[in-house]
Length: 215
Image (cartoon, rainbow, N blue to C red):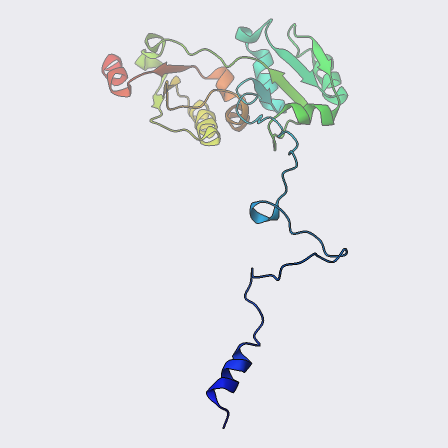
């Protein structure tokens, strides 16, 4: 049977714990440990690309149907920047659909870079301010059909689909809130397939008060 001293000697032969490296010079071929948390060095990072998802979405319409509907809207005459691929530009010129707007022909890749990631532009984009809403009184005539009111709906594609459906069912307009509704541009207009150009909308601060005024 081994003595207590022998057992202690065997224990003393254990490898040193992690982090307790012996002092002394390193071998030339041994790499230095990376500096900083997670092994990352202090080299400067390249600048991040600007986030185009919000600012450009508020100023661009894209897609064939939304852009052509905007060009046909008299309220849009003389405003905006119309961008199109050569094929779409020829289509607009042949059909005389520009309505006084000058067509700026661009490459597909250049047009894609101007828009938010994932935008399906179909070779057409229109940089223009969102449409202004009408007054509540302009929607007050009950003989003109139903009014759709949206209470804190913030998803652009859902709101765009409601615009499309409301137009198809003969609504006279849509009422949205000032602070809790997306801009009528970008993905919303794409989902609406041109309905935002033909169906008037009003923006109000308080839906309850708007209902009282319409009663």
